[in-house]
Figure 1 (cartoon, rainbow, N blue to C red):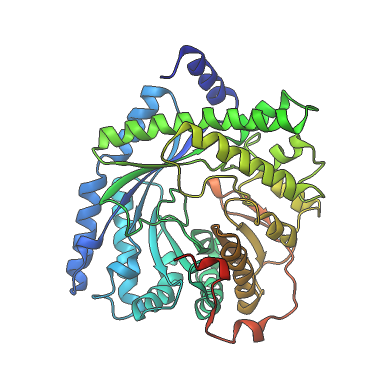
Figure 2 (tube, helix red, strand yellow):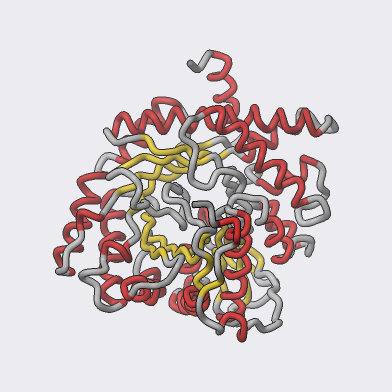
Length: 454
């Protein structure tokens, strides 16, 4: 039961500390839409989305009014399209028609994004997987709301290096296809290792085959709330600091739990999970980097950054799991560059580098996220960066991801503006040491020894 004191605290967090529910994401299975005829497949997909999610946005808006809690995004995730379109799609262009159908449905339903234009190739590619992957650059250039992801490895299977090499080339192509929009297509494309089936956040969201026909997943956010709380214990011991973060994460997660259960009730679908992730925005006071600085760093990226982030991530999870029995997705702290003003400032000051960000991904929830790099960065270098992140995820049994934007026609130090929640970013330097021979070997990096648990 939520008492009056908690209500007052929640109102304070909303009005003064940027607390919001970042997204209500409805996961929808499209497995029953499969058909060998492409036109019928597209029709089935469109009808299933419209019929299942017709009330998603209006319910979200009702809940905002009911509880006074901002819900920033209403989104949909679907079954990985490589699985759904395998029978009907014989070419990459066939898959593009499905992307356009998803986009049309998203606009009709008024959702912000629709995720699941995806392939799962942890142990190898089917023909359908490869055709979908080859279609990604065009699909992202001709749609507005579609997000794409490819899972190229896992702790159980190892890393598909053929997929890694291909994704380096696809990211370059996606950058060129959307050159006139500062390579925006790449901001809607993420490459993952150990991708979860129930992630509500874009661009990596898809509806896993182990999920129910339709579910509601909620992603909460509260960097400003956490920062405000730890300002009050400035100079205190780590024990007090950790207790403060845990208690704050508990309160933030309770808000997400409340919204998720009400949304599930009103929509008549099961409640899936609450994702605990601290997801920053470009807004002042809504920064994970600023939390790390309040913990005691002069700037994110300096000595102590990885330890401070590990502490934050762990305490957020400890507090969150006490507030909800159904915690999932990614859950922890995001460290995107373009979406976090503190990260942007550290890059501009020369303190935060892509190598330090990689070290930080060993202890945070995701990986190298929303990082702009020079447009002339080679496909092999991008593949090498993907392989590095996948290895961190595979060995540490955690989700890692790469959402990197080689901005066509721009170089180090220039600024690229993506708009909205995607923010802006200075283009970061990338090592020019070649890894061409490494990523061209082909085959699969085997799973680590600790993966063998049967």
